[in-house]
Length: 278
Length: 278
Image (cartoon, rainbow over all chains, first blue to last red; front, side, top):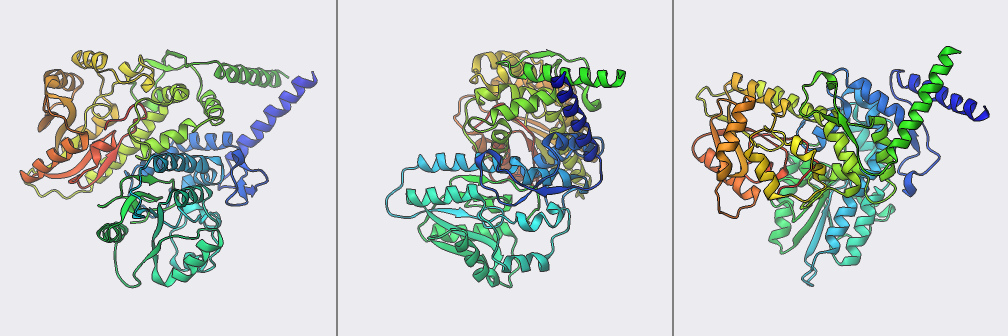
């Protein structure tokens, strides 16, 4: 009976967790454990279990687009030009970002990128480069977005700009693993970001402080020019090719990092359900 | 106590379902209910509950890439040129395709496409067209793939060709909804498929039998020419534009339906974790 009572207690606990999932807004707790041996990006963890996340997801499916299908359409570049995540998806996106799911998805992308890079035959002249985006690619802004509703608040130039000036963003560990492997293989990292030139020092300092050393170039957007991301980034990639470089890979969290000729021989799309860059 | 016993029974049922999820291979049962009011494509349903699907997913995460992260990387065009789904993901993909998830994801895509189309201002000269792929877009081959492991078996020209000749594929209901709405709006559907010319009659017959009537063109691949999908389809889109048509939208389940200039003003990526077309 001790065993049956134990199970009964577990069941009631599940009911309590389920009822928590019905409370409005999301709740977060300090994370104590590491998922699947992956280093943490951020100390917050979802307060609710993934089972509760599933309940929330199912609840969301009763009105509008369910959050996991919204994420599918966002990640495949079908839903574009959105300013904020759906308010009903804050809890879902928070669970996704802070739970293991975001990290597992990132790992699948980087595993594929490394397998691809290891299979390349380099010409031996040091002309092969790999283009990396910064935000949500080399660096993770989870410490910022965890305080700002995971994309439920409209983008705020002022507060995000102040955060960038702190140079405090952690690395996305999966991207760091790719970066190190590419350097070992002799493929030169080129950092290409939509951050403006006035953030060059803060960005370089941040990259160095988390271990991104030895990159070939750090390319930022000119200060006062209006340019959409695709125009700017494809233009810079064109300049690289015109200068004799071969872009063997291109990794970013936004489709606007990846689209626009020349795209690079292969593109690698990291997850980002928090914001859209036009 | 009756209530507590009831809960105890529910808990044991959950344990039994969990243990079922540990049995090797996938199991499917005839579907009796309709999910979320969506018409069925296929009468099979996952034998295991979605809770069991989650358990299976978690189990898969212990070795290799977990199936949901594999699907993320496939759907975002990061993992390419794959011949079959991972053997360990047959159950996951089967659950995804036959449960509500595939249909919810398709609905999110079509809802976005319809909202976009309704916001267009047409020139009034009848030159606006929308490009539709066939397999896993206008038509669903789930009846075939449910018998062939949901992509775990290598593609078989002979058996799939025989299936196409039956002209028996159901419509993907979400795509049909988009198709009908576009016709109401005055946007002309153009069907563009990688199926070869020898399948024209069977394809036209199948499309008509499930209700795709009144399309502007049905374009198939020439019989004996070696052409990758991107070359063929972007070439056909170029011809459409050269003939004065405006491609306002382009929908397909493969990235090779959508990439390659001219892509169309907007692309809409339907889910397909079962196969890859180069």
